[in-house]
Image (tube, rainbow, N blue to C red):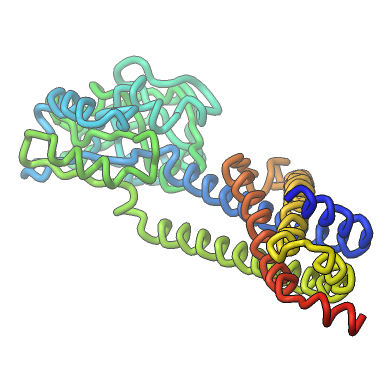
Length: 386
């Protein structure tokens, strides 16, 4: 085996141009695979964070006549013990209303929360660009679009009209921007007590919202939660059921990424096989002499397997370095108007290691064809036809 390794190394050194060409081919393949895979993963994570990151992954609502949850303390307790995957549990008291300003009346959604709990889900404090969070009764925050439409600034007063005709004067303590226009334009956010009083919900809530540690496990966690809840008139929804188009798009991206990576690997594999197969023909005289001197067919085959292994290792290392270089260049030049990367680059070390391993394995598989050819060489015929 050591003899085969030494011969393989000598063959690679003697054909430096050919060796460099193979290593370059492998490294380009690994770099493209790494670049595309990391780019797609970064895009997917960015999409999920943008659409799901600041929203509940699972929502419990009521199916009874008044659509309210009365014993919500019990629901929260059963929710928290149902799975360790569930985090950031918050109750909500929602209801339609209208905001009355000088020029017009617009429909809005009044949402009341326990502010400390809900901030872990929606992260209003991160999106607050003016003023403070509502802490006292009759204090609210509104979104950027709604503040512009109504001409409302922090510390201004607004009048909220309920469907029953009741009017309530509220103080706008802050303005937020969650980067979602439908939320910025319609949500009036306040504390739980204020919303319950305005909407006439007594001490009831309309939903219990939560997040899970792994967003793509939301459906299985929701299914388990449904069987844990002891109150019968409750419905459990998860974001995957409500965002089928997004999931379809993410799956399409993943499939496209995998297909591109597979074709890149196949191209690398075929390239290595063809070059090493030619190498067998080029070095047939040396192989014939080695066989005549007593080297076994197995050892002759191992020469090319070792060549594939060394070429794969060198190509994988250079390919990973090239891939990081491409990602760095992309993150520096493909920018949004605010200077942030167009697509956040996600570095998955497991994916990087797998890409390198696939390149090495592909190179070794590609070396099996020339290895088989070398084992079939007849030393007498090779030397005779020399």
